[in-house]
Amino acid sequence: MSFDLLAPHYRWMEALCAGGQLQRCRTALLPALSVPQRVLIYGEGNGRFLVELCRRFPNVSVTVVEASAVMIDLARARLQRAGLAGAQVEFIHADALTWQPPAAAFDLIVTCFFLDCFREDQLQRLVPTIAEAATADAQWLHADFQIAPAGLWRVCSRVIVGALYAFFRRVTRLPAHELVNVESHLSAAGFTKWQRREFVLGLLFCDGWKRGEIASHDRHIT
Ligand SMILES: C[S@@+](CC[C@H](N)C(=O)[O-])C[C@H]1O[C@@H](n2cnc3c(N)ncnc32)[C@H](O)[C@@H]1O
Image (cartoon, rainbow, N blue to C red; front, top):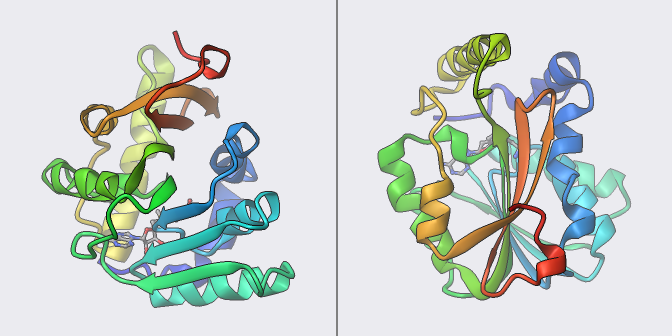
């Protein structure tokens, strides 16, 4: 699996296929987060989320685990262009399936359009590994695609997601071939969902999960 070939084209393809919707989805919950100190981002890609994170939380320390060297170069260049070359960002060029994060070190985990790259059997191992890196009160920002529950839009969303998998599997050799529901894995790792925002009629979602106590005024899911 490698996103290196696709990386230089990722930005214009995203603009063409989704306009600004993916970026709106990635960043939707940034204003709702408690100020983080140490952030662990998996599969950041070309750095669009990273720039907004560093703008909103200038004192944050960020670790990015990314398997594509080309994506890392693009993210570094984007940080520079944004005037954020001095931000505390460490890029780790590694496969998330084998990289072992430090235990209980991060109070914010970010997985934007990343967990959909994996099969169920891989997520069964990967999510607990990621969760071990989270502190006892950590937040987890998770954005991804989903299939609509019913109606014509269910058919449409199936077709769209199916086409995306066909494309990514061909170009990047992605191991996954369908969306896996990760909620049970996050719950099993001790996280509770407290917020959800949806975009494009629910095709995209951004969820806020949290470990430990969730204040009732923070909870936006019943
Ligand atoms: C679909 S892209 C999403 C990029 C970005 N987060 C976004 O919101 O558009 C998936 C990203 O995860 C990275 N990735 C996929 N599998 C990975 C793995 N096993 N370890 C580390 N990074 C991986 C890819 O290189 C790519 O940058």
